[in-house]
Length: 163
Image (cartoon, rainbow, N blue to C red; front, top):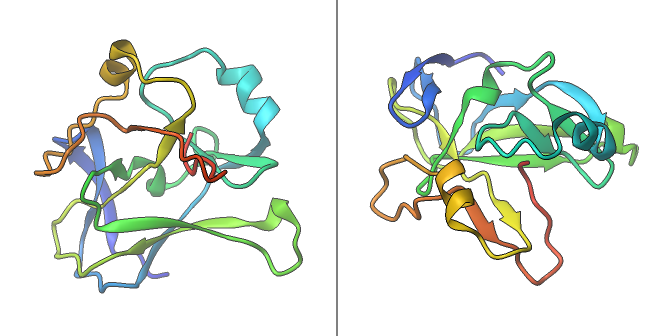
């Protein structure tokens, strides 16, 4: 994937990722990278740190990508309620969950200078509290902005994509 993106200051959440050239709908923009860790490892290190800021991406039932360690520019892509990108988990053909990857793809054409966003799809089982809404506030500015990155968990057995 040739790089058409750069990290710089964002009014959404401090830092963000912006297009340095036009990006076409359906184009792979960047792979989300970082250290591959188990859910238990990240829970041991970060558990209980409810800060509203994370570089953890749930890869599958076994692994999480920790963008805090060895992460790339993709970790700076902000959440948006009307996103122009989507994160896809791509399972490895071998079936080895340690070889799965996450790719950020453009949902629509993105103009040079436009900030990239995707829906973090952070689902939680318990009712969302006022404190959690404050910690996980969304500042995307979209007309349909929910004001939070959090969503009630779907009942269909779907799992979180971001952590």
